[in-house]
Image (cartoon, rainbow, N blue to C red; front, side, top):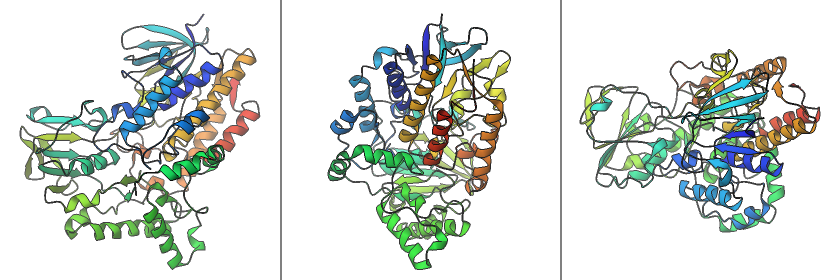
Length: 528
């Protein structure tokens, strides 16, 4: 007999809700978490300026109506300390910690085809068995740290955005280098620029950043609380799992030129990621995409005083929104400060790190501190970090040329193993909270179905999986997404096969598909 009905890997937003949902159904569930506390990415990413790019009203649980009413978000875009406080509050409110083992990293999963159960091995050598495993391991939880020649010679301090000291770091009066200008780097740069003596930013590819227009939301939150259930339902049926102000986005060709420019201006003034939904076909129509991109480029030139610096900050090599856009709180204004310098790594690549600083091109930049903001092995990294086996089959080998899943929920050949917001689901292209809750509830219902009918195993059908992989790839190829060397494509990881990882057709479409699968007695899944 297995030690547990279900082992859940991870105690972030997904793992906590999965524990709650399964416990409500009477499943003996154990959560294994590598960190000392709950929170997932919001536990680790404590770097200066860390903030969500989805609005707080949407980036929250909907399963507990009383929680929705009692919790008051202070800002439109919550900062990391407030989000972590929220996660901890939820864990305490529902007494979730009693079923979580912290400081426990899962290193291997082995499936027994005869007993129909998984053996879960952790980094302390302990083993336990479970009939089912749910990997709530997160889409951005395995950090990348490319090694630079001479890195160990540096005599100053080094920090990584994904593992920032919990007590913080005083950078006042320091000469600081930041390597990387994705969301983590951008937020760090904006936050520390006023305090440091000198800040040198090493940029490989400039991001498209849109203003957050962050603000307090007392009145907005009260209005939403009055009809939260209806509000959530609209979000679940939307493309991105979160709502944008105004009507449904128009198609670009349906607008006159002046109206298209006005729409871009309206979205820019409203702020946030809804800018990328100005036109319904922004990621299908190259002309619409270029107009939206040039609008942002113009704003950069208007903001940054030095034309040469502005040009270096201007993205031109990829379609807008084909890489994850950034939401900023004064990023471009930073480069008008006398203490901030920008190094374009396409012109002057990093050659090595010395005892005194960073050598880029022919110049040594002397610094006291280096901050690495070098991104993540997205979506597949966390699962591939675990040695997942079924006999002589390994998940790593199966996914060597790209992930293969059915609905992003299971991978054929590995029964009784579910993934929350796994590859080939909307996940990182959506409000993660909407996608997390949908997956958690779908998995809980599927497990209840298995139990009620006396089955021992559930597994994705190979043909159904092949069809879903083709569907995911074909829909991505109808867009401009593959035209960017993004982490959506795994392009930031040396040696990783470049395939598009998320499902692009949207949360609402995906929900309709998965609801249909469940209603049709879990079509595409095999039971035994």
